[in-house]
Image (tube, one colour):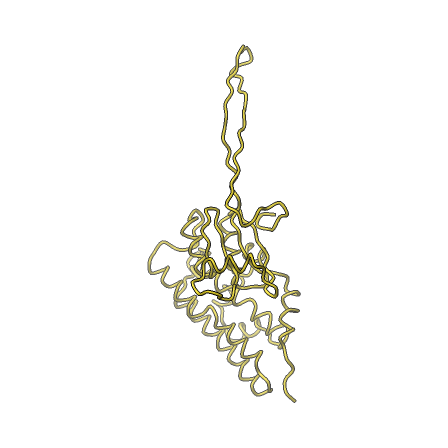
Length: 280
Protein backbone atom coordinates (compact mmCIF):
# COMPACT_ATOMS: atom_id res chain seq x y z
CA UNK A 1 0.00 0.00 0.00
CA UNK A 2 1.30 3.44 -0.84
CA UNK A 3 3.12 5.14 1.98
CA UNK A 4 3.78 1.95 3.96
CA UNK A 5 7.26 0.53 4.61
CA UNK A 6 8.49 -2.14 2.20
CA UNK A 7 11.31 -4.61 2.51
CA UNK A 8 12.88 -3.64 -0.82
CA UNK A 9 12.94 0.12 -0.20
CA UNK A 10 16.46 1.48 -0.05
CA UNK A 11 15.99 4.19 2.56
CA UNK A 12 18.59 6.80 3.33
CA UNK A 13 20.27 6.90 -0.12
CA UNK A 14 20.12 9.43 -2.90
CA UNK A 15 20.46 6.95 -5.74
CA UNK A 16 18.17 6.84 -8.72
CA UNK A 17 18.07 4.14 -11.34
CA UNK A 18 17.81 4.55 -15.09
CA UNK A 19 16.59 1.85 -17.44
CA UNK A 20 16.88 1.76 -21.22
CA UNK A 21 13.81 0.39 -22.94
CA UNK A 22 13.84 -0.45 -26.61
CA UNK A 23 10.49 -0.59 -28.37
CA UNK A 24 10.15 -1.75 -31.92
CA UNK A 25 7.44 0.17 -33.74
CA UNK A 26 6.04 -1.21 -36.99
CA UNK A 27 4.60 1.64 -38.98
CA UNK A 28 2.25 -0.56 -41.03
CA UNK A 29 1.51 -4.26 -41.59
CA UNK A 30 3.37 -4.16 -44.92
CA UNK A 31 6.46 -2.43 -43.62
CA UNK A 32 9.67 -4.25 -44.55
CA UNK A 33 11.66 -2.32 -41.99
CA UNK A 34 11.04 -0.97 -38.58
CA UNK A 35 12.32 1.80 -36.36
CA UNK A 36 13.88 1.11 -33.04
CA UNK A 37 13.26 3.81 -30.42
CA UNK A 38 15.09 4.07 -27.13
CA UNK A 39 13.32 5.61 -24.15
CA UNK A 40 15.07 6.56 -20.92
CA UNK A 41 12.92 5.90 -17.88
CA UNK A 42 14.11 7.24 -14.51
CA UNK A 43 12.89 5.55 -11.35
CA UNK A 44 13.82 7.85 -8.46
CA UNK A 45 13.55 6.74 -4.87
CA UNK A 46 10.62 7.72 -2.66
CA UNK A 47 10.45 10.45 -0.03
CA UNK A 48 11.52 9.09 3.37
CA UNK A 49 9.29 9.96 6.33
CA UNK A 50 10.75 9.07 9.73
CA UNK A 51 7.82 8.65 12.11
CA UNK A 52 6.03 6.78 14.87
CA UNK A 53 2.34 5.97 14.25
CA UNK A 54 1.22 7.06 17.73
CA UNK A 55 2.74 10.54 17.38
CA UNK A 56 0.35 13.43 16.70
CA UNK A 57 3.18 15.41 15.09
CA UNK A 58 4.16 12.58 12.76
CA UNK A 59 0.52 12.02 11.86
CA UNK A 60 0.32 15.63 10.67
CA UNK A 61 3.07 15.17 8.11
CA UNK A 62 1.77 11.72 7.18
CA UNK A 63 -1.63 13.22 6.31
CA UNK A 64 -0.04 15.89 4.11
CA UNK A 65 1.93 13.24 2.21
CA UNK A 66 -1.27 11.24 1.68
CA UNK A 67 -3.32 14.28 0.65
CA UNK A 68 -0.74 15.21 -1.96
CA UNK A 69 -0.58 11.62 -3.23
CA UNK A 70 3.21 11.57 -3.03
CA UNK A 71 5.36 8.47 -3.22
CA UNK A 72 6.92 7.95 0.18
CA UNK A 73 8.15 5.41 2.68
CA UNK A 74 7.23 5.53 6.36
CA UNK A 75 10.39 4.65 8.26
CA UNK A 76 9.20 3.59 11.73
CA UNK A 77 11.30 4.83 14.65
CA UNK A 78 11.56 3.13 18.03
CA UNK A 79 11.78 6.13 20.34
CA UNK A 80 12.79 3.91 23.26
CA UNK A 81 15.83 2.68 21.34
CA UNK A 82 16.78 5.30 18.76
CA UNK A 83 19.06 4.02 16.04
CA UNK A 84 22.37 5.70 15.26
CA UNK A 85 21.08 6.33 11.74
CA UNK A 86 18.04 8.20 13.06
CA UNK A 87 20.09 10.27 15.51
CA UNK A 88 22.61 11.13 12.81
CA UNK A 89 19.86 12.15 10.40
CA UNK A 90 18.32 14.46 13.01
CA UNK A 91 21.72 15.84 13.96
CA UNK A 92 22.46 16.69 10.33
CA UNK A 93 19.67 19.29 10.48
CA UNK A 94 19.41 20.45 14.10
CA UNK A 95 21.94 23.20 14.89
CA UNK A 96 22.46 22.17 18.53
CA UNK A 97 25.07 19.41 18.91
CA UNK A 98 23.70 16.38 20.72
CA UNK A 99 20.07 17.57 20.56
CA UNK A 100 17.60 14.80 21.40
CA UNK A 101 16.37 13.34 18.11
CA UNK A 102 12.63 13.73 17.55
CA UNK A 103 10.08 12.77 14.95
CA UNK A 104 9.09 13.49 12.30
CA UNK A 105 12.00 13.86 9.90
CA UNK A 106 11.39 14.22 6.18
CA UNK A 107 14.03 13.50 3.55
CA UNK A 108 12.93 14.49 0.05
CA UNK A 109 14.11 12.77 -3.12
CA UNK A 110 16.60 15.58 -3.81
CA UNK A 111 18.18 15.13 -0.39
CA UNK A 112 16.44 18.04 1.32
CA UNK A 113 16.05 17.01 4.98
CA UNK A 114 13.80 18.81 7.46
CA UNK A 115 12.55 18.45 11.04
CA UNK A 116 9.57 19.92 12.95
CA UNK A 117 6.10 18.96 11.70
CA UNK A 118 4.78 22.47 11.01
CA UNK A 119 7.91 23.29 8.96
CA UNK A 120 7.63 20.04 7.02
CA UNK A 121 3.95 20.63 6.30
CA UNK A 122 4.68 24.03 4.80
CA UNK A 123 7.62 22.70 2.82
CA UNK A 124 5.45 20.01 1.23
CA UNK A 125 2.80 22.61 0.46
CA UNK A 126 5.30 24.87 -1.29
CA UNK A 127 7.27 22.11 -3.03
CA UNK A 128 4.23 20.13 -4.21
CA UNK A 129 1.42 22.68 -4.75
CA UNK A 130 -0.68 20.56 -7.10
CA UNK A 131 -3.10 19.60 -4.30
CA UNK A 132 -3.25 22.87 -2.32
CA UNK A 133 -3.75 22.77 1.43
CA UNK A 134 -3.61 26.53 1.94
CA UNK A 135 -5.98 29.17 0.52
CA UNK A 136 -4.64 31.80 -1.86
CA UNK A 137 -5.52 34.90 0.14
CA UNK A 138 -3.02 36.39 2.59
CA UNK A 139 -5.70 37.09 5.20
CA UNK A 140 -7.07 33.54 5.01
CA UNK A 141 -3.56 32.09 5.38
CA UNK A 142 -2.85 34.35 8.35
CA UNK A 143 -6.06 33.19 10.05
CA UNK A 144 -4.93 29.59 9.67
CA UNK A 145 -1.60 30.43 11.31
CA UNK A 146 -3.39 32.22 14.15
CA UNK A 147 -5.87 29.38 14.68
CA UNK A 148 -3.12 26.78 14.90
CA UNK A 149 -1.06 28.92 17.29
CA UNK A 150 -4.00 29.65 19.59
CA UNK A 151 -5.88 26.37 19.50
CA UNK A 152 -3.52 23.60 18.45
CA UNK A 153 -2.57 22.56 21.96
CA UNK A 154 -5.50 23.88 24.05
CA UNK A 155 -7.38 20.60 24.54
CA UNK A 156 -4.09 18.76 24.80
CA UNK A 157 -3.01 21.00 27.69
CA UNK A 158 -6.39 20.65 29.41
CA UNK A 159 -6.25 16.87 29.14
CA UNK A 160 -2.77 16.96 30.66
CA UNK A 161 -4.25 18.78 33.65
CA UNK A 162 -6.82 15.99 33.99
CA UNK A 163 -4.05 13.42 33.84
CA UNK A 164 -2.05 15.23 36.53
CA UNK A 165 -4.98 15.64 38.94
CA UNK A 166 -4.41 13.78 42.23
CA UNK A 167 -7.64 14.53 44.10
CA UNK A 168 -11.33 14.57 43.21
CA UNK A 169 -11.35 18.36 43.64
CA UNK A 170 -8.41 18.80 41.25
CA UNK A 171 -10.04 16.45 38.76
CA UNK A 172 -13.32 18.41 38.85
CA UNK A 173 -11.47 21.67 38.16
CA UNK A 174 -9.49 20.07 35.33
CA UNK A 175 -12.63 18.64 33.72
CA UNK A 176 -14.30 22.06 33.88
CA UNK A 177 -11.23 23.49 32.16
CA UNK A 178 -11.57 20.92 29.40
CA UNK A 179 -15.18 22.02 28.80
CA UNK A 180 -14.03 25.65 28.70
CA UNK A 181 -11.45 24.70 26.04
CA UNK A 182 -14.23 23.14 23.93
CA UNK A 183 -16.16 26.41 24.11
CA UNK A 184 -13.11 28.46 23.12
CA UNK A 185 -12.44 26.12 20.21
CA UNK A 186 -16.00 26.56 18.97
CA UNK A 187 -15.63 30.36 19.23
CA UNK A 188 -12.32 30.29 17.35
CA UNK A 189 -13.88 28.30 14.51
CA UNK A 190 -16.70 30.83 14.25
CA UNK A 191 -14.43 33.88 14.48
CA UNK A 192 -11.47 32.85 12.35
CA UNK A 193 -12.92 30.17 10.09
CA UNK A 194 -15.64 29.95 7.48
CA UNK A 195 -18.63 27.72 6.78
CA UNK A 196 -18.83 28.68 3.14
CA UNK A 197 -19.29 25.41 1.28
CA UNK A 198 -18.49 22.98 4.06
CA UNK A 199 -17.59 22.26 7.67
CA UNK A 200 -13.79 22.37 7.54
CA UNK A 201 -11.99 25.32 9.12
CA UNK A 202 -12.07 27.16 5.79
CA UNK A 203 -15.51 25.86 4.83
CA UNK A 204 -15.27 23.68 1.76
CA UNK A 205 -11.47 23.64 1.69
CA UNK A 206 -9.48 21.09 3.69
CA UNK A 207 -6.35 22.91 4.87
CA UNK A 208 -3.30 22.68 7.09
CA UNK A 209 -5.44 24.11 9.89
CA UNK A 210 -7.62 21.00 9.91
CA UNK A 211 -4.63 18.68 9.71
CA UNK A 212 -2.59 20.36 12.43
CA UNK A 213 -5.47 20.63 14.89
CA UNK A 214 -7.13 17.26 14.25
CA UNK A 215 -4.16 15.16 15.33
CA UNK A 216 -3.73 17.14 18.56
CA UNK A 217 -7.43 17.12 19.43
CA UNK A 218 -8.26 13.47 18.79
CA UNK A 219 -5.89 12.11 21.42
CA UNK A 220 -7.20 14.21 24.35
CA UNK A 221 -10.74 13.18 23.44
CA UNK A 222 -9.78 9.50 23.52
CA UNK A 223 -8.03 10.01 26.87
CA UNK A 224 -10.87 11.77 28.70
CA UNK A 225 -13.58 9.52 27.28
CA UNK A 226 -11.89 6.15 27.76
CA UNK A 227 -10.17 6.79 31.09
CA UNK A 228 -12.05 9.60 32.87
CA UNK A 229 -15.68 8.93 31.96
CA UNK A 230 -16.30 12.13 30.01
CA UNK A 231 -18.73 12.09 27.07
CA UNK A 232 -17.35 14.79 24.78
CA UNK A 233 -20.18 14.54 22.24
CA UNK A 234 -22.74 14.96 25.03
CA UNK A 235 -20.88 17.99 26.36
CA UNK A 236 -20.78 19.55 22.90
CA UNK A 237 -24.53 19.03 22.52
CA UNK A 238 -25.31 20.36 26.01
CA UNK A 239 -23.41 23.57 25.38
CA UNK A 240 -24.70 23.91 21.81
CA UNK A 241 -21.27 24.00 20.24
CA UNK A 242 -22.67 23.35 16.79
CA UNK A 243 -19.73 24.70 14.78
CA UNK A 244 -17.32 22.52 16.73
CA UNK A 245 -19.58 19.49 16.35
CA UNK A 246 -19.71 19.82 12.56
CA UNK A 247 -15.98 20.48 12.30
CA UNK A 248 -14.96 17.47 14.40
CA UNK A 249 -17.18 15.21 12.32
CA UNK A 250 -15.62 16.52 9.09
CA UNK A 251 -11.97 16.25 10.13
CA UNK A 252 -12.24 12.87 11.85
CA UNK A 253 -14.05 11.34 8.87
CA UNK A 254 -11.47 12.57 6.36
CA UNK A 255 -10.09 9.41 4.65
CA UNK A 256 -6.46 10.45 5.12
CA UNK A 257 -7.02 11.00 8.83
CA UNK A 258 -8.48 7.52 9.18
CA UNK A 259 -5.65 6.02 7.13
CA UNK A 260 -2.96 7.59 9.31
CA UNK A 261 -4.31 7.00 12.82
CA UNK A 262 -3.61 3.88 14.92
CA UNK A 263 -6.62 1.96 16.17
CA UNK A 264 -8.48 3.62 19.02
CA UNK A 265 -8.02 0.53 21.16
CA UNK A 266 -4.24 0.59 20.73
CA UNK A 267 -4.06 4.31 21.41
CA UNK A 268 -6.30 4.06 24.46
CA UNK A 269 -4.25 1.20 25.89
CA UNK A 270 -1.04 3.21 25.50
CA UNK A 271 -2.60 6.26 27.17
CA UNK A 272 -3.92 4.14 30.00
CA UNK A 273 -0.37 3.38 31.12
CA UNK A 274 -0.01 7.04 32.14
CA UNK A 275 -3.22 7.16 34.21
CA UNK A 276 -2.52 7.15 37.95
CA UNK A 277 -5.27 6.48 40.55
CA UNK A 278 -6.37 9.48 42.61
CA UNK A 279 -5.01 9.88 46.13
CA UNK A 280 -7.21 8.42 48.79
